[in-house]
Length: 220
Length: 347
Image (cartoon, rainbow over all chains, first blue to last red; front, side, top):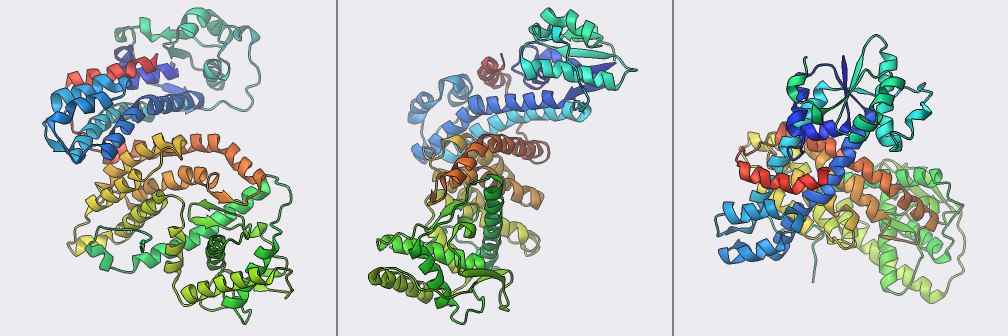
């Protein structure tokens, strides 16, 4: 059985913050995992989004400290530090400033400390991605994939994105007719609304929403 | 007050080693040819309409520089040297109130003067027969007269005489340094200073280690931080996020300078500058360039930016997998706090 994974499954697997992170660890127990170039493109877009909306806030904050704070950071600077933290990363940086920093320390030491924490968190996520990336085979849709069932369009309506990924899975199984394919996702739109149509029209044997599938449900 | 081009307050023993400034200058010169070739190809690809800077003052200046620096018309002025001299002349004359309307833009290896836009009707590019130089140079193929005011002609001639005094017997290094003094952003000078030292250390790493000389990575990190400090977010807001993330990965890679693959560090240290920043620089810092060319470059920015991010991420992945050593000191509470911040983004 081919296990074709949707982007949200990679996200769930890699990011501890994802609600379904534990469920997605099932990937460690599965064989014959596939994704596609579209899946990986979408993953990259999500990485960009996280960079712009999360990591960059911390980076900018560190840059601001370097530019505007004195060389020595005293206890008396703590409130100013906390006030300068962007709201969206307050819980993370607040915890560091309130609980982990021994004041006084140099500005560079403080920034290094925050950078290290952030790098450690990114390291975790990246290593999980590299792990799944090393075991997962990638399919690029073949040029002669010529048709798309119109009945599917109103169902998976996110154009080249979601529908494109489902069609990638379809193309993959067309190229491996002797095998069966299981589509693993966390997307309600695909798993609830379209599941039957996908199974009927696309030669996909199963559509599994990992939200409802605890790891124990799968055999190797 | 005299301003040093690659202002460097950090003295170290490495400065006494092989003339790495010259190596750096040579690389910059070679790079400026690749900048020029890229611009020429893009100019052709973009399908820009025929365009030529027709200014008579510029045509005269080109002829006058060639005559002054190569009176025998032997093809002595190597093309990159010629472009740099032209750039310096243009800059000097502007201060004198004379506008040559010379097209140029700043890019990876300094200002690019696209020869294919210059009024070179009576000038030919030839393969240099001059022994000391390799590559192409310019010669005057057909002497002509110029219809310009005597006072302006005198100003141009005086300016060229100044250039001759300064550069006729000087090294490439001096021209490169002086050209970078004109760079519109301090970040440009600071970044080049950082890269120059890192590249040198990587080239000489085995020797330095053999001689038990410390690599002094902290000095490089300081140079990197210094460059970032001078980055003007308000001028280049589109790449600021990328700069900071790039800096973070470079910083912790340079920290492992003794062990890491030199090609990895060189490519990583270069990628933001060459593949992203310079593209935004060229559409911001230019003069007398055809609008169609600038617009074409601007249209290329979003896809190029996306490509940069994909390329950078590959280096980032390599950094996390091969170079970065996690501290393993993150407690559950910090982990939860971090995840709390990311969670809303994953919905």
